Length: 331
Image (cartoon, rainbow, N blue to C red; front, side, top):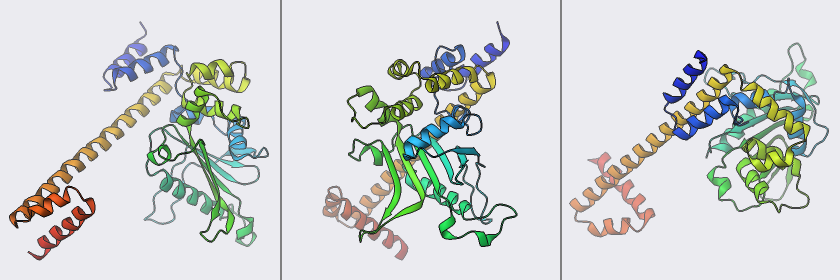
């Protein structure tokens, strides 16, 4: 038996992944299942602006509703540091367009409740890069009107809570225009688009979408959400774009190195989730201790009625916590 296969199987079994994920990785290794496109390793290959600009153009043109968008080449995926105190942002699929616009497609596997904050920072850094000249260029050639757009598209495999709770039949949310409370509007240089891949897949499986739906774009988002979905495979078989992507994913994951990279991604996600769960549990424990300390203090002052009210009124509980903290400061 191939020693490399034995080593990989041992690595899988000792990885700590749930049995279901181990079986999925083994199916990927044997070719029984395709690795999902949303793996960082896979996405950067499949939608590479240098290797496959036509695939990125497909998403950009249809998502932004602009058939003229053309990819020139990839862009650096790390922003420069503006000061010794700033942090770099690292992009997934950044590219320069032929009209000098800077674009980036971000694929988020885990639901991030801070998705708007992150996108705002990423988009702002991209726009700031636009407001600079190329090496050897003249700053005098640059003015506010000549600055090209920065376009950020965030593909969310799992919709964050804010999107799940928002009642809408839309799965693409385009933010291209700013609107003041007075009603005045203007087109922004920094444009952001949020795509709910899970919602797109659910809509595709359910069918019955609007007549003006861009079905091909919906199919692409559904395939990114689940490349092994039988309905997507059946409906897109014979479409060269989709067939080529599936074949590309299959061939790419024949590499042992690629298999190890996607395994490492799953382990990183598992570690991240474990850390968040631990922090959440620790926060709950700390909250229970604080509340118990507050109630003990109230009972020591013969304020049992306040305890009863606090259990029924969250706002009053906050007032009591402030009073409790003040008492500790003054004691």
